[in-house]
Length: 282
Length: 114
Image (cartoon, rainbow over the protein chains, first blue to last red):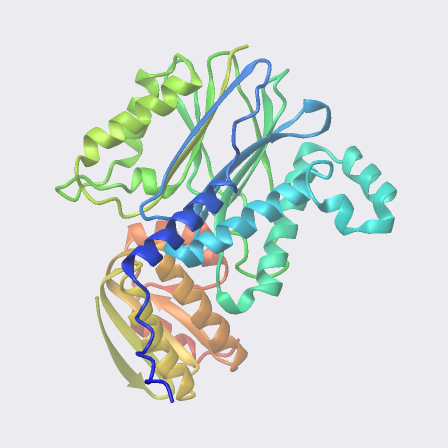
């Protein structure tokens, strides 16, 4: 008879750290590897998780023929691993229901491919946004209602040639249209957060980016970030950083992140921070 | 965050003080779950001493209102400060939750028809 085996040791810090690294690495794959290159529009983004994994996400992709660019910024409720799992789900549902060619919408519906594809192609960008929001909302609310998870999401469909865009704000922090003269127009919610209850309805709004104007979408972790003294970064500081750095999309993102870092200093971040900028160059 | 529960007839009011965030959401959920499991489906969340709620707090409210309604009751909010009210408005929660000025208003609303 062999000697009794010692109990298996509790998982070590190293193994947990390794798993966290794997999770972080996999999650990175749910964000775009690179933003699309678009004639007439500069795109740039930043995402800074508060912890190892993030409940925030962003996306940007061209629809067929590249005539429309879809922009997405989302914030799944709560933080940590639960939020990270749902971040992957929300991002995938949005991308797959918006992009029938690159995504899974066509494959998912198998034999009805042709009909569905025609219907999608004839839809206006505003129709597309309400369909994406409605599909994602109902999927989460019906199939995952027991988890009570939801996400606030800002969606826009931008036509680079004209600068015209439609947007749908599902319970999200208002995005900003930064004018060349420094004025800031807020794009308020047009419907509730996604996943709250099945059958929610969503409206859309529209706007235009003139040359040198920028659409700036972000999560509340940006404006609610705290200084060591406990003060919030706020919309005023955000807008003043945008005004001071409107030479390119990359300049806008860098300028805001630098202002944020200067403001928060060494304070522990309490939420994920995400920022996505589309700037028209005319 | 601190909580206390007060009963008036069949309505149970959860008084909440402090911030409802990622750290305090779980204990708050436990308070509501305890009431729901005791069959108390007519609930008021007294937010008059809540200075901040994160999305984790909203998630607690969502889970609680769904469960209360499935048991034939409701969760109603009272005394939200302007910052909390703004979070509720932006996220669309004021479309699903009834919000009252005072706890008294919220409690008596359960007695009204409709």
